[in-house]
Length: 314
Image (cartoon, rainbow, N blue to C red; front, side, top):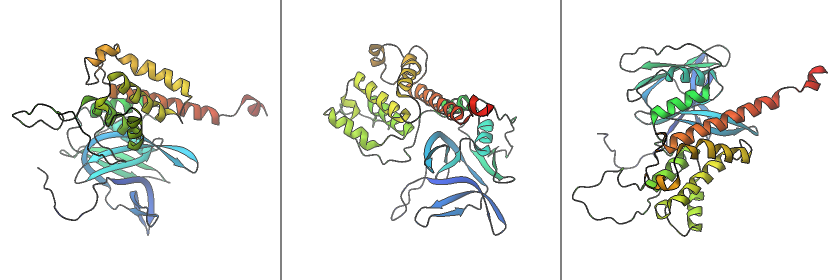
């Protein structure tokens, strides 16, 4: 059991490790912390991080007016860490290729940042117990979306809200029980659905509260299933709004997420969000759809940068 330290301390925010090769006074580093107050990169002298990989997220960050897609590797160790690297970097690709070979993420792993030539940083994964390296075959043209989806399915539902603080929600009063309910039992299925999707898409909690206020309720558990479905859909489509055409987003969501489930009345009988027809959970279907949207966005970006036939003839 983790010992709880009483008294003053720092907020329980994750520690971000930004992957980038830095050379300072002859020393080479593979990642750094960022001090926003001083606007300064602080190199991390340790080349490896040992812990449990508990989540994999894709995050959009704007850089110089352009969208910059990042891979966030959430690691549970002595603290909660987030290793952030560009999705197109060699670090992310080498991590994904190695992680795709892992079947059991319940064991600790050692993530190593290996600076290479120029401005390149590679990643290597090691079994923390045996110290053995997880070897993979380099494949620059791998299906990264499918690899990310596969790893996410092994890791399970999102576990951490990295950007927004949670506030206590009220739940319907239930008949007292002889034994105290577990933490998972205390969360209403509707509340869990909305929370999981909100965390997955980095959707602001204030917008969820505002939406609920318009429905004259305080929490999703006070809504019928159909309205929770609509809230989940609106959150997802809001996430996709700046990535692909809205009509394409809506139609692909209908096909890839809603088609994973049976009719509404059957889903109401299974409020845990598990697709009866395919065995796919709602959060897994949404993760797969998000990967599809990001793939479409990358294709559109690549197409827009290709020279036209007229320009090529010129």
